[in-house]
Image 1 (spheres, rainbow, N blue to C red):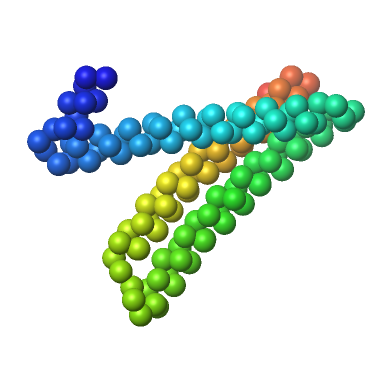
Image 2: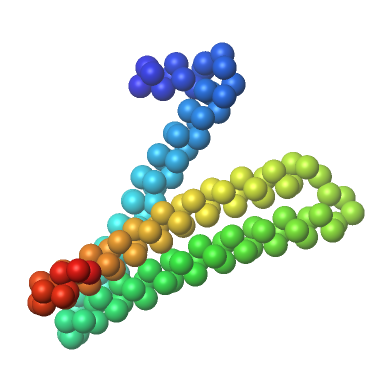
Length: 140
């Protein structure tokens, strides 16, 4: 903890800037893990009462991953569109553009991590199901 305090209060601006970027990325990853695992646990609990074929949960995991992927791209599109539209407005200000860039970076990083965790989970459920059945499936 002392080393982080030292790095974020360093005299050199580059060291200070990169230290904050590393801290921000780390917090984003852990936040994405918490949100994803919470929502994934909720979905698992909600679907646990239904009788399903053994391949349906794998399909549902891939559908969940595609939903996160869609949310990620919707978020990027929305903030990029706002940035473009702000340039066409007559009272354009620089702080508005910077705010939109920060929002886009924040939400896209969060949703990108959640999308990655979702695809990892879907892939591991596929390997757990088919990787143990056939020798060829072990290549998954």
